[in-house]
Amino acid sequence: MHITVNGQRLEIEPGQTLQGLIESMNLDPGVVVVELNHDIVAGENFTSTSLAPGDQLELLSFVGGG
Amino acid sequence: MEHSDIFEIGGKRLTSRLFTGTGKYGNDSLIPEVCKSSGSEVITVALRRVDLDGGSNNVMRHIPGHMTLLPNTSGARTAGEAVRIARLARAMGCGDWIKIEVISDNRHLLPDGYETARATEILAKEGFVVLPYMNPDLYVARSLADAGAAAIMPLGAPIGTNRGLRTEEMIRILIEEMDLPIIVDAGIGTPSQACQAMEMGAAACLVNTAIATASDPVGMGRAFGRAVAAGREAWLSGTGPVSTLARASSPLTGFLDQPGVAS
Image 1 (cartoon, rainbow over the protein chains, first blue to last red):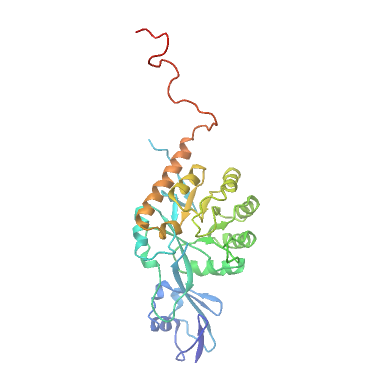
Image 2 (cartoon, chains in turn yellow, brown; image 1 turned 60 degrees about the vertical axis):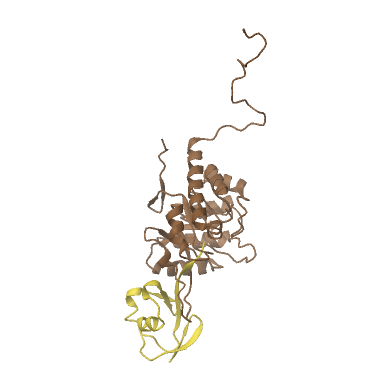
């Protein structure tokens, strides 16, 4: 099924969780904040949140800035 | 004996009046060394999309654990975007301080005071410790104070220009008229300029570019730390009067070889 992550279309397995997706991208879930369909998903809910077709995800982290 | 001088913002007591940034470093591993050399206790970061093509540019692993994080809302062009970024930043779980930066002018990067005040009001009500970045305007400052800002952060000169306190007169007015801490943010290019801001009575300075782009950022961080402390000490000690005519520092009588002196 397809979802959109950071503006890019991505094909993922049905039933994939947010936690699983983040880990499959070699990202540390502890340093990522997530917006799913314009709602913030708390870190403790990554494992229990399953993704659905057409979901729009924003994955963000802190970078250098002034 | 040093003056006792307490600096408190958002319920936190700070011993350094130098805030630093994490942008523009040639090598992010310099960041913890600058934190140490400068003595700074507050550090800014930005929030951006993760790079899906791998390679983490996450800055958090370079920031010492004792630092207070001050995420900025850079990228926001409206109050709504700033609020969205702030809520995401807080969701990281690193505290609730936020630097509001609302900019839609890409040439001068001047902040939009109206949108900044709107974002401040919303976020202050949600319990954020709000430090808004602004162009020094007394009316905007009053709006920000009324909206619940914890401090006011006027620019000295446009971001990244290293041009010093171009807005000196306006900053002076803010310091005189506002009760909130005034933190000069942007444009400070040298330690002497930071010292000058502190001598004027600013509560703190935020310096990123001048340190990160110095030949020796660690040394420059040390210099800025000392300069901010020196300027604050000068402010507390009360600078002497200024005059246009010279006033001798040594006595004007009893000179050697003066007519009438007994041999």
